[in-house]
Image (tube, rainbow, N blue to C red):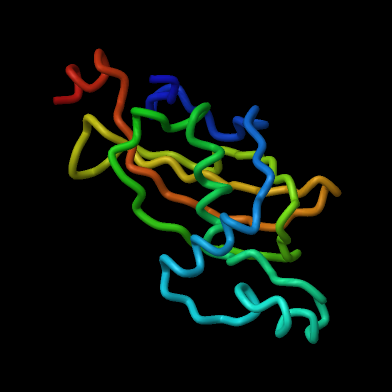
Length: 156
């Protein structure tokens, strides 16, 4: 387990995640067909060639999942109870097959759970950034987090 417990996060902490990922056509195709999304802009090269982008766009739901997933090893691996929600999700620039995505995460807020004092809620701001330094995805994620074992025992 490499994730941090609720108590180890400080508001304002910034994580520049080590793992980056180059998106492939297979990623886009798989994400699109598994979600049953028939949008030709993701699947049809001929259709996409007639758009302003001239090539298929990567499915934005895959992009968001990738951005959140790349943040997990340094933040929430093994210490998350569950995601509570994502909000303020934005895709200011398109992602194309061949783009390499890196992620930066900032801890925006945190509070001890009112119903479960052995857990807390941490709000993370994730930014997915392409190889040109452009933000391609931003997302505010609320995660239900375990507290450190000794703190959780005292809280129970």
